Length: 523
Image (cartoon, rainbow, N blue to C red; front, side, top):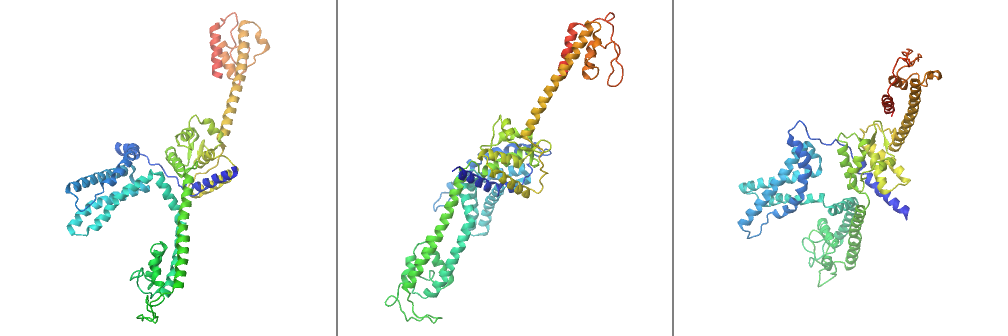
């Protein structure tokens, strides 16, 4: 049904926005230091961000092949080749680490994957250095082999680009709290059964699966036996000696040193009940609960990867935001909003031309024609998932969480929206056009009056339509002043116009040019 589908989307949106993006603080974007040498800015723009990452995967995929192998009869030539290849990879990864540190400066250690790369490089270099120390001081080579395993960590860097592996790890991380609780339950069951086993099977004859290690004599050995039973492997070997109830399989009168218990026989009925109940509880219920929880979380992670929005989309949004808001003000100008949403990746991207779409989103705007990060994110999310009544309540909760996670948040008081701003612009344009038409009519009326005055005597008897203001001044500059004294706004009298007999009428071309100038000044 539609409402079930909508609620599923809302739950998915809430779980995405609640824990991660809303609690993410805004940090200033690293800018290339202008006071440093030009190479630093160049590395920041290209080397550390694009070139190194472009070839990183290819180097990492080849790195495991360089791990030196040590068969019994390996030739010195092969050893030298593998050693040289390994040194090449160490140099490459060390150079990459140094380039990033040089470009990013102390921001390099604010990224988790960079710290991981740094540790792998240090351990790789340490393995080379310690090899000489091992040979000099005759330390066991096992330690050197353990340190050398750090090079396998290079392969783990591929997780950044492997979406399937990240889905599996995400499912495992989601399962950890529940798995911990189930582990405590399993330990409680094992604790109870180990005490019960020590009380009933501590002196069972050692044969078949029961020996000096796997027995019920001590608590530790009982736990080991129960671990074996939990795996459902070899539990019948532990049960066989317990099924012995009398001679010739066991001696019921055997003296046990340090104990008053006699005999080394078992109890078949108690043993069968003990093993059956424990196998059912531990293996068929508890262990399968582990599998069920992991599979459930894996299905959830798989469904989320097929959802319209996922956590990676929000991370992409914030990474793009940092480029448009390098000072971490949490706002961007309305003028760059079109470029911002066009820079985003699918499904949040709104390709150009997108101004009409952004206007219809009705985004709140604060003083200075700026829009807040959360408003843009929520509008784009609503554009992808659709609109509903629950979205308003979700938006309020999102704003509260965002403010709690960003105590330094700038005052967020919207004064208008993108839709209202467009209405204001359209209204202003209409008012301007109407006023220009009104001024044009007045100027044409004044021009007609002055023209008739220049052609006909006594035309001023009817009175000038414009005696002061911009239109009157412009017309007097073109046609000259009238015989009558027209009062200006300043109270000064205009000089009289020359009589028709003593002045020459202006040419028609000059009149047309003057009228055109008036129209252009008004329009």
